[in-house]
Image (cartoon, rainbow, N blue to C red; front, side):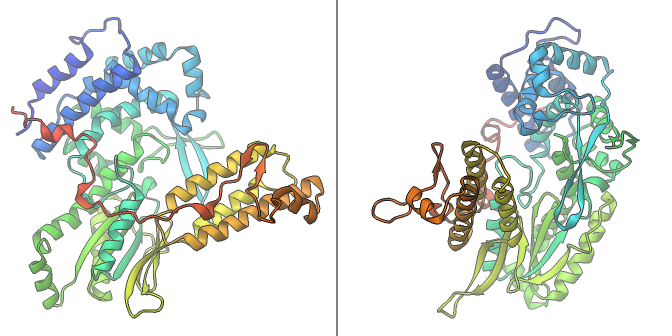
Length: 503
């Protein structure tokens, strides 16, 4: 059962406390806004879950609501990218200094008057592995706030339809869940893998096809016009030239990950429909294998995905062609360089981990192991080298704080892998880089270093410089990340416990 469009409009009007005319706005505090937005999202999610075919026809009031805009600005200002300005040169801190309420009032008035138009995003090219460059689009703070408001409204609607096999850029889901699912399937006989990557996914998404998928859930023309306007906003290149965007959703925008997931949900739906119609039960899967057919599961994280196949290489080759056909209407193609068919015994890299099926040392038993891939290790070493260059004049305290921040974040991500020896070796590497940096700066001899960092009993003490102790990677506890499957909590659990709404 779905919620009537007029009832949604009344909810949005009640939330904003208005009757459709501009009145002086009392901007709520962040705490009050958070409660109101949470209530709004819960209702939207409950309506979306109750009727998967329902189309929301009046949610624009939610986007313009003061509470939504306050929370949108809070998220934009609290994001690491808040320090980066768009084409107008204004940062979030500048908006706060001049008065956030006044700025939000201008945004809201423009939205309600239908006069809001996004400006081109600022292009920034960042290096990728292999010497290539990735394009980031940096919107203005104003555009980021409106995008964040749209995301607050649209995310609970589309989360009702997203499949469990998708893990990237979704609330309460993380890369470790995707790795744990691959580990589970590999342990159950899914040993052939289509390790796939979509070529320039964020740059090639077909706008018409994407908008068609958005319209499947939203028919509010004002919201659709906003989404389309951001897709067509254009890019201001580093040379100062404006390029039109006829396809894609530039990476860097607040709304881009959600739009990418909406586009790529065609692949999730394809996999789910095949599973539910032909492979849902254990008996169905056994029957398929008896007839020489393979069974398979999809695990996707944003535009990177793998298909685990219980069958033969031929089955994977057939799936590769089917996947290409599914993605084609969205304007997407598989990257020939990064898409390959591998057996789990040969291993493959995914999300920074190396996943391989191998024999346990000293036994005849084979298990699926998750190691740290080579690229993240090399990347970490490059960062440490950059922070400990011999000619660097950073204060020890500043340098160690930055090094420790990098090491802790890296260790927290990889502590669920089979990584004890790797972490110990990396600690040795980091320790020597810091010690040699200190020796070079102060022209210290090895004898002086030992006198400085050894206790009276001859044991090496932790490196302590200016009151900051070097983080010891070797002491990070390795823990197994447990597969959560369908038990991943909903972002809005209260929506599932409340009565189903009626029209």
